[in-house]
Image (cartoon, rainbow, N blue to C red; front, side, top):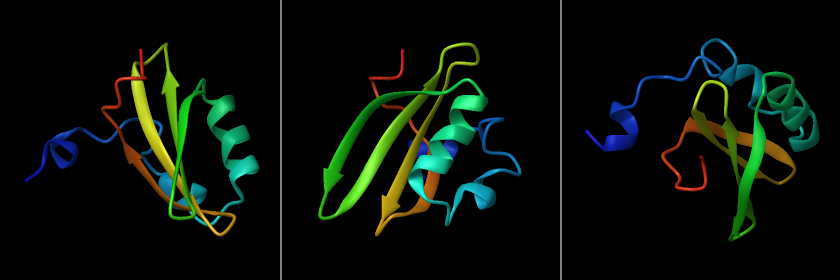
Length: 83
């Protein structure tokens, strides 16, 4: 099992990840901001946009990947930009 998979599911994802999937990225960003997350960085690879979001109060770090204008995946991240 990879280190990413070994991470506990952040509280921000419990019962919410399916809600974010399929949303337009702007709406998903508003939802994350309402839960204390701020953008820590963004990467674009082959048309996919991967945003890194950090919640300084909880220490949680998420990667939100959007493809074709919709959130395709939300997962815990150990990105170094989360601090």
